[in-house]
Image (cartoon, rainbow, N blue to C red; front, side, top):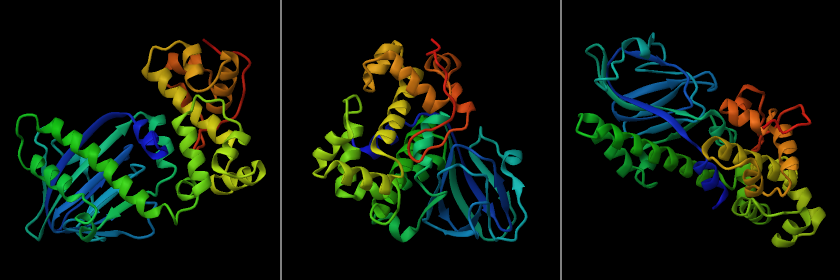
Length: 325
């Protein structure tokens, strides 16, 4: 599996909600934080604002947007229009929300995801707060079919429409991320830029495809056609950490998924991510995630309480001497 597919496959949707907004100017709504939010403007125009953006972004009919980190944000007909909290007026049972007065109409379909917190961290660390795809790009990028299907399903409540909308929203989420990644690979620093580099990108593919292999820096360097020192320097320069640091962090992320989603024994989880020694795995898990593997499984992801840092992997402070089963 290629690295980006590996990251996307690791994301686990806990819940999804959506609403079709039909608004007559003047109107303004504020939305609370979620794991991620997406939307598309079917008719009219509006302005999107959130704290991480230096200025409001104008959205026109046919545009779609993805708020990768799920930041709290506002949508309104004009940047100066006062807002009301969406949660105070929405009727999710009806799925269609009508607000505003008799001015020009805007129709926006919006959805919000809640992911298992740790599962979305690798992706949100490498993507910008907002992905905005203009109407002029939608057709060229092949998003129009998904968008039209989503618009049709939200127009009226047909049997099974909620399930269809959920699936379409997940597809649109992935399509928008893939669109951004394909356009940014050669220009964005860090992990995305590293994917486009011949040598480092190949190494990343190898580590993701065979995460259980006992890789060494020398073996990876040989596989990509560089000397050990040249490869190590290039990898750190592009990714921001050493090859073995990256591999360990990714292994612990994969292990955390197995601990949450499977009934594998601890030793089996360790072997599946490249550890013959259960003790060595437990030591690495605690060092990276800040809690023991046993505590993480028992508490259903207790590591999410801690301070996690991902340059693309996961990192935290503190080590205990036991595995904590």
